[in-house]
Image 1 (cartoon, helix red, strand yellow):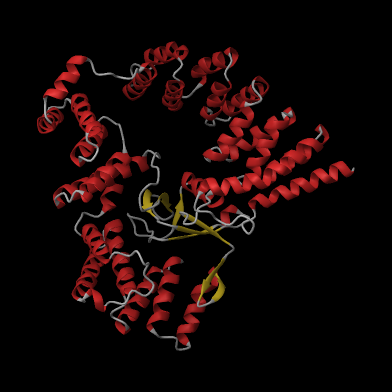
Image 2 (cartoon, helix red, strand yellow):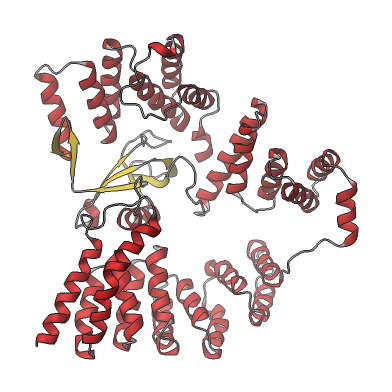
Length: 544
């Protein structure tokens, strides 16, 4: 009994790896993990010594209770070490609940894979269950591939007959990623089977090309041709090939130019642009091309063209659900409750109040959100974005995270106030005569963060009238109206933003008051950025 109690005590102690007081947010993710691991390792070591199979129910219960946090991660490490097969089925039962959450998903995969064929039996059973319920089974096939073994390979190869056509493209891509030529005959059969469906046939052919691709090396003639032509001539050749529809040739030349001179933004942009036409979407390359163009003081025509291309590429990747957030903004997929339109909206930092009941979670967005079609503010997150958001909120450990979780309170006016009472509190203070510029400014910031955009703008305007030198007032008034125009096509907001920009530009910089602005704030850069958005076509068009 003492042994069991000691084991329970260790399980309880392991829960402290999720304690934010013990492990505050770290800027360096590796340092954060190392601290937690250092704490957890001796506990896991003691658990291994005490463990016997009678305690498996205790471990399983903890698995189910601690989804999506650090304790689950370390419990997986523990299971991997003890190799108790009783835990295989519970791990598989957990998978459907988190199958879009890669880090935890991969941790469980690695744990299951370590069991080898004994886990594969259960995975094949789970595969059959999912097939009967018409659920996505690519994740399970991927695990069977990773476990390996001829029996699993045969099972994977024979799976395509049972897959619906919607899954075939994913299946072909999965086989291509293995780089295992044993799967080539299967892909060739698929190409023959779906030869009358162009979309599928093309996708399968791409998978065959990917599976059989060998690293291309330039032969002596190619190298000689590149070396004999200077970069100006090569750029002309690349543009000519692109214009004539010889995209592969154009891409090859830009690829060579980019590899020989990585500071040449025209080469980088050319490679990214032609790559886009070839369905090789390289956002990082476009980002670097823009940075190099700005650093090299390229003309505004070049800079604007690359900016617009970068935006177009980002939106394409978001639509494909393949956008890795490396830019200034976070984007999410929303569905309008009123008209049913699904759309991609800019959210920026998300302030999230997490409830024990997921349906009661409340999100507050850095940027205004409304339907681009009917202008309704009654929006709900699409399921895939909701899952991503919950994952980020629970798992992201950074000093300046994209997602912030809270205990349902916010600091305002040196008081800790429940978020749902903040609006009422500010209105009461205003009724009591709190009408100085700083209070208006603080209140506007708080209301904006809790989705009261119109009221926030009204308070910023009042603050600006009292203190016309506060940069923070102009910053918020201009930025909010700029994005109302750029994101939602509001022409009136465009006029308002331009009018405040003119006022701001007319004030000598040394006279301005930078209260509430970050020390790194660059006024010229901010004005230039806002003017760029105001001079471009609203991105609402891209959602049509």
